[in-house]
Length: 88
Ligand code: FES
Image (cartoon, rainbow, N blue to C red; front, top):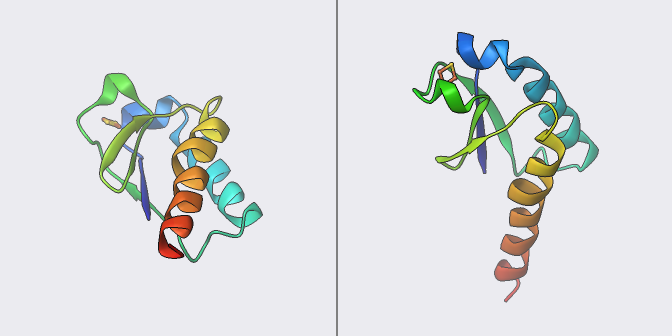
């Protein structure tokens, strides 16, 4: 799974740095560093929706306040579902 956080100037002002740092911490906390790749990208062209984050190319609007819920719903829950699928 690839998570990409926009670090363009508009998203930066809205807290992309905090979002990245929180995501790094959450990935470590939940031990999903082998499954999840975190990277940064420049402006994704959706500045008004920032902080823009994509998960496997799907676009989400995240803020430092919502990053925990975002991670739970769109990362952890998805990983769990995928694991269930893998094991039939
Ligand atoms: S700066 Fe993030 S979408 Fe433009």
